[in-house]
Length: 357
Ligand SMILES: *Cc1c(COP(=O)(O)O)cnc(C)c1O
Image 1 (tube, rainbow, N blue to C red):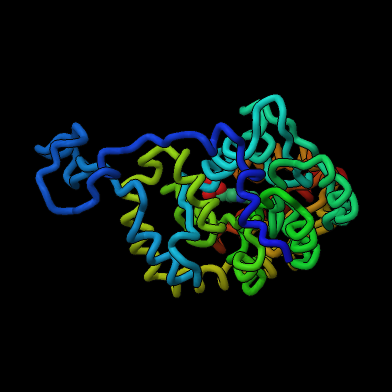
Image 2: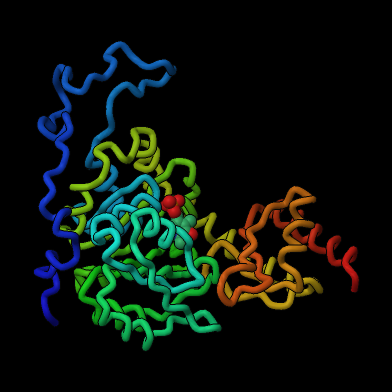
């Protein structure tokens, strides 16, 4: 295999490679002891009981060490963002030239790839999944000739809930001369299927994971990217210096010692997922339940807009995916607590009884 690491110049925009990053106060002196009069902080304290008056570590060193150990990678292969959404945005800005470059997505998929691209005036070239939600590999491979600056593959996919074959993804990674992003936001619910083990072999592979789903820390905003150290280096160069706040770094570092609790929650959610699947199947409003490797179910109903509204009237909020490609009359329902799930099931039964059957 050709050594793609030497292709770094092709993966990022020239102006990004040439850019000299902002050097924060804490970049120039990295010791933790001293009299710190360098960052215009308030040395007297905070307006809160807990102290937050010092800027956080811009390189998140201790958190990265913990993550590296848990994930079996080197700290230099980790980039952390203020949620995966920040990483998506940084990746697009690092690789694309506005009004010139394009990226490739595979709808129906996560909406932020195209929103972030549009914000930067980057064209999005969609290569739809097949109607049964598999990657249209031949079409993707054909489109590589136009050199999309990024390819986004969401695996398992949101909103369809399914896992793609690793083989299909690897064929695309191997054939691409640019970066391929595999968004593994839901991978904790599909144990064993992560593509982290292919990082060494494919330097143009970037894998995103998040603390927002299985780890239960959506409110703290922490996303992870795993990639070749030179790719991480470019992202570090363009990120806002203090993008991951102090509290998030502290609590996420603590959370890394609690992966047993996460495993328990994941098993409980997977169990609820199969229970919900069985019970929803019996509801006459439901035509089909797609198989899920995530913490949500995509269901095809007889009338998604109507059922969505009827649920809202009962103060139960789900997501309508009715307007997504191949998702006509589909609702996406997060697996909640067993009580929340019972509320949903009861509401669906009531709506079925009230509708004209
Ligand atoms: C929820 C989700 C994320 C997570 O985004 P954060 O910014 O880390 O909360 C990323 N990708 C997909 C596909 C998601 O569904």
